[in-house]
Image (cartoon, rainbow, N blue to C red):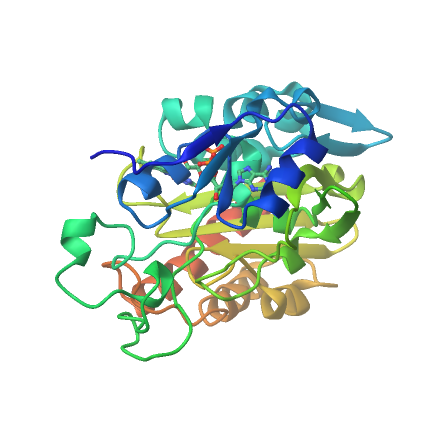
Length: 324
Ligand SMILES: Cc1cc2nc3c(=O)[nH]c(=O)nc-3n(C[C@H](O)[C@H](O)[C@H](O)COP(=O)(O)OP(=O)(O)OC[C@H]3O[C@@H](n4cnc5c(N)ncnc54)[C@H](O)[C@@H]3O)c2cc1C
């Protein structure tokens, strides 16, 4: 498959990159390229200008300042799971990064690109030839969502591995444009609209991911259930964070909704409780009702809900085992 025609630019600063995005509404950022380039070959993303931000020097870093972990968006997934401080303090993040695609995706792919990746759907992630058998779907520029067979919003599923781990760690992000900079909770970055899943303002670039101090203390894990052990997106991914001393818990899921989801009902049930077999089983039951997936892949919604609960059981079991 060939890439479509596009102009190519290599800005040397965030301001320069943002100016290109503001001047060219059809421009798109390229980081590692492992998500956008296949989409361009499938002709589902057709940027007029490809803006390679890899030449911007200040975007590739992992720093720890007073317990707060700061990660630049151009940091490769491989650097994340090889970083000693991440491995020791934020194992969910290391585990999520090492679960992405293959070694090559982890080497090329960045954390920023992973967070900002396009939603996925069996009707969208296909070649132009495959898609030509039916009318264009909403996400590809048409009017119908084939998943729900309605002219409504796009129901494609957010399927990134890093976002659920970061949500369970209460991460925040910094978005910068030519004139402005804002820091927001990562959770509010996801729109819930499969067609435009990210709440970017025009000209904005993701410039930093921040994991607060408190999140380094507790237990954290990311469990991914996929068809194959490598080169595969999650059927379901579940992240869990626990501070058993404080009796505080956080849960997040991916690939079950149009956005990565915090499992608030599960958290509300668990918070303030000691973990036990009974508590775990009730949490598992709540987790399996925490989302209403639709059939964006070959896997049925009920199968996905079942897996959500099962992955949470694995995580809680691990905490209980460690606590003795
Ligand atoms: C075969 C295959 C298997 C894969 N398996 C997985 C998997 O298991 N799990 C998973 O999560 N992903 C998977 N991916 C998707 C992809 O490889 C990863 O998500 C990767 O981390 C994307 O990072 P990137 O730097 O290559 O992103 P890019 O492709 O460069 O960019 C992705 C998107 O993010 C935007 N973007 C990138 N950086 C920024 C920024 N700083 N600010 C604003 N926008 C930005 C781009 O414009 C683009 O829309 C897979 C891809 C393939 C082809």
